[in-house]
Length: 154
Image 1 (spheres, one colour):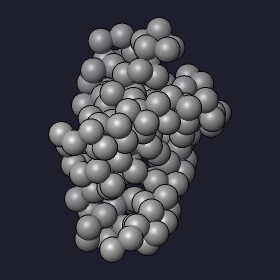
Image 2: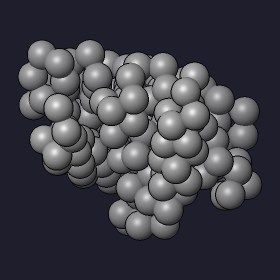
Image 3: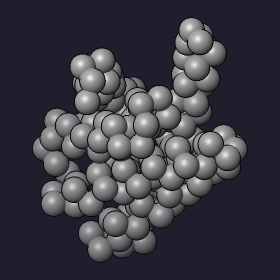
């Protein structure tokens, strides 16, 4: 990989941590703008670098909170990668469709991983703030990408 791309990946991973400090109220208190940088990365840097940024950013944030999901952190990181890859794929078709698909994956499908830990109560408690956080992160990343793409010299 090129040095510039690696540097951008590192900056975006750090930005994921900073974004995690902007909280949206939720039962677990860990939902914030942590994935905006990863979603931006998948659009700007490409599929695999962006998937790495969103997954590694999530793992660092989980580590700073003492891994509240334990070993499931790895599964959630993989889910985040899959969501980011789907977001980029559908973004090329239509950005509204991309936001809808990624919101479904990140806000409705992915939280099913906590079902064995907390049942329907935890799942239902997580879905509304996760959907709101997903939409917010996806919109922020789409706007940032659009601005950078237009400003980038040809």
